[in-house]
Image 1 (cartoon, protein in one colour):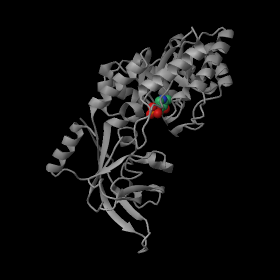
Image 2 (image 1 turned 90 degrees about the vertical axis):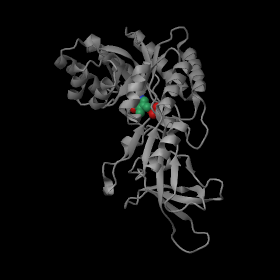
Image 3 (image 1 turned 120 degrees about the vertical axis):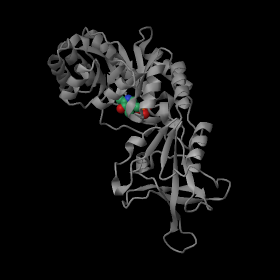
Image 4 (image 1 turned 30 degrees about the vertical axis):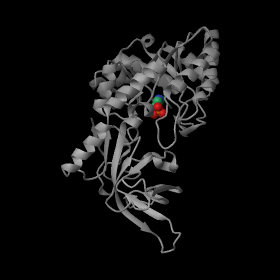
Length: 388
Ligand SMILES: *Cc1c(COP(=O)(O)O)cnc(C)c1O
């Protein structure tokens, strides 16, 4: 936790405003993270994945630092534009778009689009016609499947096609008059293996060669996100990822290095945010001596901690009693929904002295929290957030 966040939380408490859980994000950490990405991958453009945390202050800072933006919807495009990014610094990276949203994006000036099948290519070609944009000005990259091994939050088979099909999809774009621009993939979020990019880069190089044989010169490889933030476990630094990616690029592309971009989300904002929450109840289900303690917080799966789904993301939780003996606890949220349990399969060690009314700090909460909070499920308001 940074001194700025500590001071902010103390001042809020002194004013008696500490009602309900809150996420506080320190922009100075985001600034450092951006600099670290720029240093680790010097020839790569950074497209911040807006969905990780779309706070206007975050987008404004990143726009001023020169970042580009990967967006998933028209609303995110508008947020990036409002933050000061020009349309040429925005990609529409969602492979699942309504045609009218593509038209709107084109009208707003966006020219870079992700696809993973021919039907999506056809939507873009028609949208360009509707929007009166020359198809050759519209750049299309094809997303390929990636198995996500090594990731704590893998992205499944929802996005991307097999590499062999990507060649046909890109050829289809080319035939439609669009600019077949390159390949993208995502190695899975919170990727702990620095070598995870190697296989996808081998496939990307194959797609570049196959397309070249069909007379299509691809330019760009989008290396996606996946760069981790620190939760409980240590993670490799961003330099290690930069080095491993550079080695893999050299191995597969040799002297014909493509243009590259990255789309960090979690790695850009995760460690910049802290959630302060409160213990609502500590109880047991029986009087048996070995009965596990249940600790209920005023935040749970519906209040911003959705990534505890399947106990995937294991946050670091700090309390004022951390020197005391710890016992395994089931940790749960406050709603009347039985799914609202954070850690049960692997109970969470918490101090025996932790009691009702105590504050807890949940670290690494800057990504995928505020916008993962339900609007008013069970009458609980969405997670409040402050960017400082
Ligand atoms: C969510 C997403 C990202 C960001 O992923 P992180 O693992 O948070 O870095 C990047 N690119 C695309 C296309 C995404 O959907």
